[in-house]
Image 1 (tube, chains in turn orange, brown):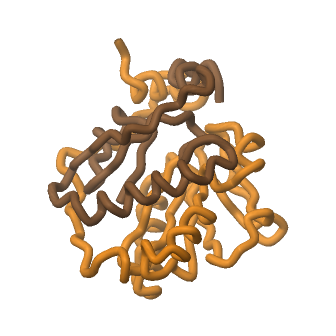
Image 2 (image 1 turned 180 degrees about the horizontal axis):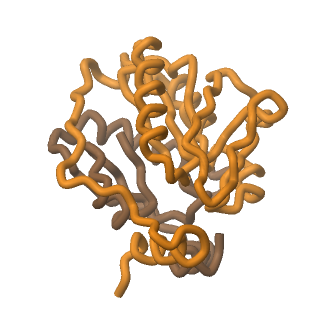
Image 3 (image 1 turned 180 degrees about the vertical axis):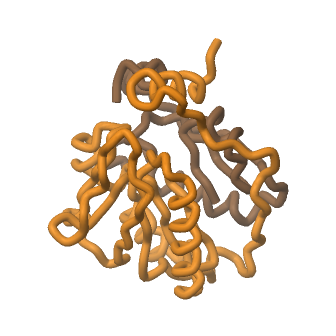
Amino acid sequence: MKSFADVERDYIREKLLPDFEFESYDEPSRVNALGRPVSTGTVALVVTAGAYLAGEQERFRRSKEGDPSFRELPHDVDLARIGLSHGGYDTRRALDDVDVVFPLRALRTLERSGRIGAAAPRHYSFMGYAIETDVLRDNGREVARRLRSDAVDLALLVPA
Amino acid sequence: MSLTLSASITRRIKPSRALLVEHPFGLTMGDLHDDATHVAILDEMLAAAERIQRAGTLEALPFEWTKDDLRSRQLRKEAS
């Protein structure tokens, strides 16, 4: 039986890019140990939902090459202002409750309860389909730099 | 700390630590307006970030999608 990774690869090859293959790695990324308990730490969200500020930021590009860019979203944003642009899932469904792919409301709940020390002032969204992995890697490093500048202790990566 | 909807893709990428939740794509945190589940999944991620020390760890969360067969159809590329 084929794995979902094989099903997805074959689907993309048939519909979009005949020579598509997923990136893969022999060794895992290293663990960066938390410097403090999450109850005193600062926590950010990094999602691949294709979230953007509707009317203010560009939608993500929907093409066979995908889009390796990212959008920066303030923590205090009104969720009703969030748009979703992604070719890989039904964004109309998620727009009825953006928290299902960009769980900002859930993070705010955990902040109010004291489960985390603080939420980061800025969160980030990519769109989870991008062929230009070199650009994607550079953009990932830029997001990491911004997270560090906000003294973020933990980034929660949420796919869509 | 990563969340994933697909173990087979995550095993190729090998993030430092990941939790698998078998919800439909586009409903990662659970059903619409199911705030309790959304918060519970983030809470599991926080706990795992404090607990998991071994690089490449992938653990499955106990959440199940029982509402319909959307995830099964998505895994066959018959729904989005």
